[in-house]
Image 1 (tube, one colour):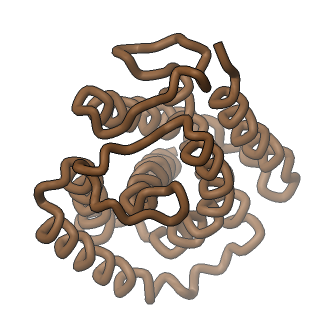
Image 2 (tube, one colour):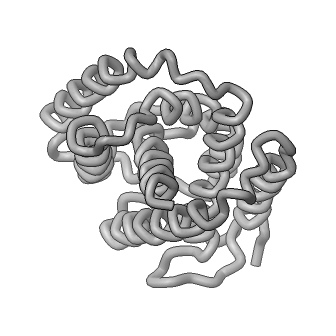
Image 3 (cartoon, rainbow, N blue to C red):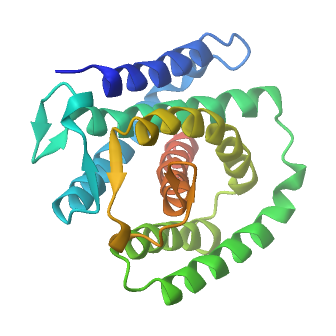
Length: 223
């Protein structure tokens, strides 16, 4: 039994609680909207992780986990998706409180269109790589829906939160992939990495955050 992956989750959770203490943002005021958003996002992407695990897209080193598994998936990986969604939403709320202006929203559609085009290209060129197909398809559907079906406008603020979330995500993933706690099957990815982080994982992170933020904004608009 080892606690490395659990400690990484707790580090991210600690960051989340530090943000909760922000007096100006006071994210806990929005807990009625945050809790369901985190819960749904955590369940959906834990399900995606179970799918990836069943198809041997990634492998966990049992030397770095506590040894409690659900369908051969370490409990820490499931915990990670809930904590990641919680941290991302806290970052989103705190940034919105300190920088409330939304004047750059007019550029967000252009960024989204470029991203949608990139996702289509990646799906075309990497259609034989399962991790790519699932990850890019999820984000394409989410982003297309948010920009062209959804009526709420928050994409600029989402992109801003995503850029900030990348900092703790990359730092923590250096441990996850560097120890290594987690390794990816080369034949299921495009084998392009930033350090130990697969290229696809940056888009997977975006899907997790976008799901959380969208649900949060929908629930808030109905309050």
